[in-house]
Image (cartoon, rainbow, N blue to C red):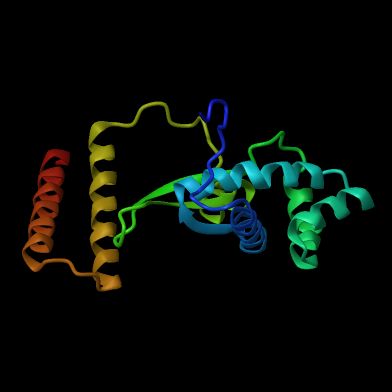
Amino acid sequence: MRHGKKFNHLSRPASHRKALLTNQAKSLILHKRIVTTVAKAKALRKFVEPIITKAKQDSTHARRIVFSYFQDKEPVKLLFNEIVPKIGDRPGGYTRIIRMGNRLGDNAEICMMELVDYNTYLQKESEPKQSKAKTRRGKAKPVAASSSASIENAQEAVEKANQSKEDVSTPLANQIDNSLDEQTSSGEDSSK
């Protein structure tokens, strides 16, 4: 009986499993992101996170211990010189698993595993946008002025679409132009 034997053997003998996890850990550290199955990613997370935690102590002893896992200088240098300074303040949880669906050949569940602080897509979104300075001048705008502003914004959007030569269907563009012309003419009549 296998009571209490929790970790995933990945259907491999111990030496093959160790080689697989070592190579995937090297690839994760070198490339910051890998695509693999969910089962391998979960096993890799248990393998690589203690190594990254050990690398927080920048000592010769820690470097030798990390080198004993990788048997390669490049990921060790990259881990100690680039990755740990960036994630040194994080108390664990250095990796993220993003599920991507199933593989076509064998329907295995595929995921992308990445180092958390190296996701360039999320960092671009989370960067603070410089907004315009807020003023307290106008408290309430009249309805006609706000509708004319929305009409101008709609006209600008149509002009931008025409300039960028995107696929805008001609009937739709004509409908927008006609509705804008009607709104501007009705806005002019109400202002008289």
